[in-house]
Image (cartoon, rainbow, N blue to C red; front, top):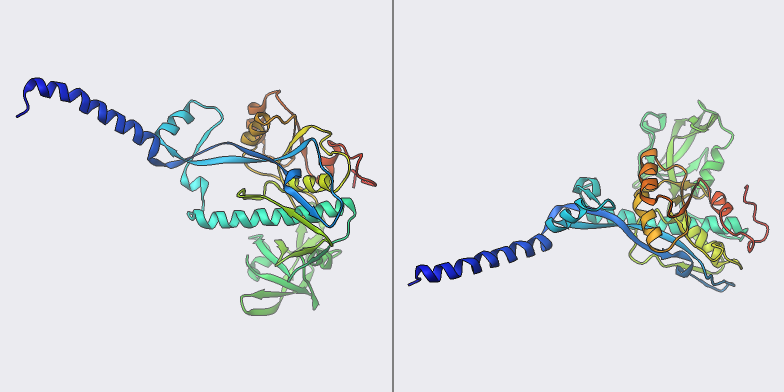
Length: 348
């Protein structure tokens, strides 16, 4: 039998134990929200391994930057509410497809692609020979209102133009060079097991109304690169395309004497395409904070960054770091020490 006095002694202990359990659960049990904040940084120069060719060490660093993303708990949501550097995201914002595994596979493919493209661009900058081969031009996106949308779909592979074979995306662009909007070209398209010739009317390019284009976004299908020697890029578990420019600069620095960084710690973000153009990335306000935290004194970011993202980035950085927008790899090199690169033309 429990006496009233004993019940009075047990009650506070029970309340205390319940409180401890609830607090523990607040720190352990995840809720359907994600927290985004400044992530890790890594020096790309140290992650580039060259075999069979002369390479050079660097005292400075060219950092690529990441955004930290983790599942929230009640306790971490409270902490996020008190921090200006952490944002709360819904599952739909984090994974629009609703399939996190599929999204990660896509982002891994984007990282692999960014490293391959960085290698191609770096060798082009340095004038080093390399051979790019592929099995056609893979269609990533089709402009919805273009004539191509009626006959070409994302996932198709273009393997010829006007009866001439195409093995890479650059070959396809070369085949279309000089053609005008309104012209109709015959494209050989592979879809699944079927290959057929289709007629496509060209549309004006956004940057030149006299230049005809298909209205598709492409990349080389099953692309491979022969450099004549081994260049390995260690991205670890980091995924996504945003380290493309940093990889490009890291490869250039590794293959040339002197230091692109000038002995400083330089933080870089932005995608890279095969022409050397730098594309916008997300989370620049978080990335600049990671750069500042890890000692960077210069931050290069895409010139195409949106006004909203720029405002958030500048508010986060204040005057703690020098920042410059760049639209090409050559513009990035203009802010770096290129004295160790013979014959470089920063205005290319």
